[in-house]
Structures are given as structure tokens and as C-alpha cells.
Length: 419
Image 1 (tube, one colour):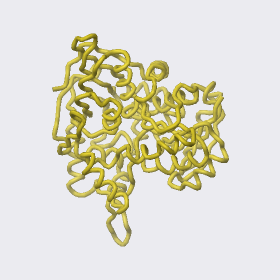
Image 2: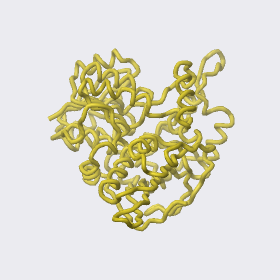
Image 3: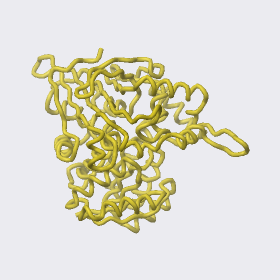
């Protein structure tokens, strides 16, 4: 029925590819491409006996638009799934436009080199105008909207869990549960234990940049920025227990603020243990989280990239990780003139994920929504020319697919609220 090109072969991509191969009546042909073709070959060899999906592999440098165009023209896919790094979103979007192919990704664009003068000038202008200072934002990809409209192509942004499923939860709540929504709190809890003193559950560069940046939330249509990790709350998560969580800036706040302008406050919280925070603060204090190159023994290195090489590979955490994740959204608002609260969330077990696809739950909770978003696009349920985030499409078939393929929703109509 369809040919799909997946760019990337890391932990999240591996999960998404496993799940695509479980729906071979839709994903009839799949090409896995990354900088390291041997990784693609190994995954293809592992999956080939288990699926009817025809799998091929290719080598590509996703930073090189010409290489991407050549690969896309050669394979002629119906959809390109970008599950590489956020640094590469724009080059892959450019290639899709050049080739007339629909596009999707799991996280919004941010630059690898945050000291680039041209990018820096645009970034600093945005900081003043928008009011938040995170390196990642949607403006770069939203700027492609007219190009995709004119080409008659769809670009789906941020179809992981958060962003992604959390936005679908918001669209679902607005459609079915509320007449008006006053507040949205997005809670991301990882109750897993991998046994290391310090490791990140996804790409260390992306993870540590995100966590060490100032926090921010949206209130009455405006950004409020706070020092990193300065707002802490405790919450008792279903099947996980009580955990400390901290307010962070996160990309879906930006799109939700745009698409649900009447919501009075939107916040994002993520849980962290004290050991993780102590290690991160120490590394930040000594400059290891810096993206600015330094000269060491005559060789130029980027500290955070060097740190990434020292830390455990997130893809290796699967067999070690025990416990569960709990990610969802708590809403307050009104229905039929009466005050209402509502909590929709998913609980995912690390060990169950590893048994199924050889991955821990962090990669699973991003990879499954990527497949489900691709499924929506390939079956014609989420297609309209332009550039969109998940909450701009009908949430019902997407959440039904998540229920079916490994991330079933739970609901609580009288949840404890976050003060």
C-alpha cells in the first residue's frame, strides 16, 4: 500500500520501525537510512523473518540536502519519517519539498551550533519578541507552511509522546470533555531505574540542553520565564508513586498556546531524581554542557559532544531499566456550565517494552506515536497541505491507534491538581 523512508536508526527509530513492521498491510515497503548503514542492515536482518514488510537500507548524511534528495528520488517514498536529530529537520524538509514527498518528525528544530552568528541574531530577536530563551522553537519549521501548502504536501511536526500524544490529549479533551479549558498541566514521569549513577534516556546533547535551560510556562497568552529547575512539585503518579517534578520549557507549550489561545495557563513538568540533578549541576558548573568548541591538545572539541561519548548509549539501557513511565495531561475548565477536572495519561512498563522491541520505555513512548502518526498520514486521515502539529488533526483515530499498538490511555475524572 505504501513506501516509507525512515531516516535514523537510533533507539526511537528502532521502535518506530519495529511497530511499522507490525502493520505491514499499510507499511508494505520500508527503507531504513542513516549515516551508519551497518546499523540499518543489522536491524533489517533482525526484522526480516518477522514481517511481510519489504525492508531495504541506505546510507545518507542527513545534514546534506543533495544526498537526501538523491536518496528520496531513488526510493520514491510516499512519506519520509524523520527520526534522526532535531538538528536535521530543516535539511530533510528541504529535500521533501524538492522531491514532492510528505514529511513528519518527532521533535522541533534546534541548531547544533548555537554560536552560529546568523542563527544567533535571529534567536536573540525571538527571545526579545516571544519572551522565552530555549534554543528550540517552532518558528523555523512554521516558516515552511506556505511552501508545503503550495506544493500540496503535509508536514507533521513533533509526533512523539511529548510533544505529540500530549497534544492529541489536549485536542481530545477540547473535543469531548470540555466546553472551555482553563489550565493544562503536562506531567512527564519516568519511574525507571537503569542502575547507573548518571545516564540520559535519550540523546544526551538534546536531553541536557533541555533540562539545563531556563524553565518557562504560558499564562494569559504570555511567556513567564524562570531560572532552571526553580519550581518543584511532588505528585503521586498512578503505578509509579510519589515523585519530585520540575517545571521545564517544552515545545508543545508553544503550539498549544497558538492553537488554544483561550487557555489561561499551560505548564510542563518532568520528574528527576536528586542524583541526576547533582550530576547535571556539577557538569554544568565545570563547562561540560557547553556547545562552544574548545581547543584541547591542538584539537577542537565540543564539551557536550565529548560528554555524550563518555555517557552510556541510551539504546543500551533497555535490558537494565526497570519500572514504569507515566505521561499525561491534567485539565481544569467547564462542561455544561459546571467546573470540571480531567486527567488523561498513559502508563508504560520498561521491561514489557524491552521484551517486545528490545527498548526501554522512553524510546517506546516516542517510537510508537511516530508510527501511529505515519499511519494517520498514509491512510489519509491526517493529510492537508501545510505544516501542522498533532493537535491540529482529529485526535480520535490517533488515540485509537495508540490504544491498539501499545500505549493505551487511562482516565481520571477527579485527579489531584498541581498547585
